[in-house]
Image 1 (cartoon, rainbow, N blue to C red):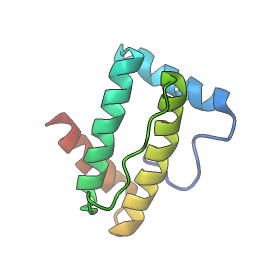
Image 2: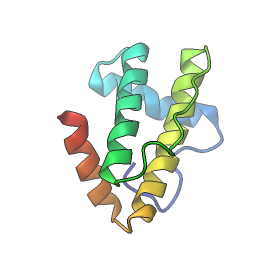
Image 3: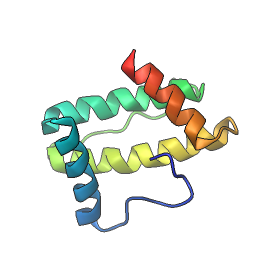
Image 4: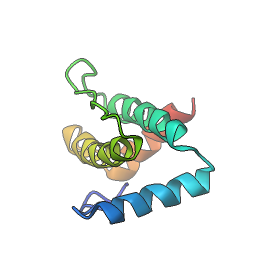
Length: 104
């Protein structure tokens, strides 16, 4: 996700699901765990870029976990891009800070 020059996720749901599936496989995660982790990652990115947590929307999750996960992937990609731009940080800086906060 640290490459903000272009979208990793196309409008093709299959592409997004493949990225998500690969990440889940590498992490050994179930879908429910993945949703929780992505919401924690959202908080870490917001804090890493010192964005206002009160004004950054929290994504609404639909009932279908697959759709929810795909929506979160797209949301996080956009959030990461906005976080980098908002503080004029290199993507690597945002990613490093977010990883530290996520792992803490």
